[in-house]
Image (cartoon, rainbow, N blue to C red; front, side, top):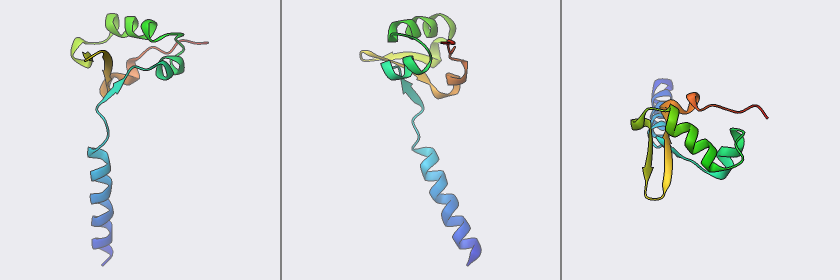
Length: 77
């Protein structure tokens, strides 16, 4: 009974984890959180400093892979 309950909770956690996004879009809000005034400043920094496979453009939006989010430079305001 207890193990069944634990397994059910673990399955629920696994389902949530698998549904998390793997790419984060660059947005004005995210740029401001990082200390940039515009998306272009953050985009230029990412383009010059992140590996090409982890920073890509889909359509007209740029995306950062979740595995390199910790590398994104945050400006001190």
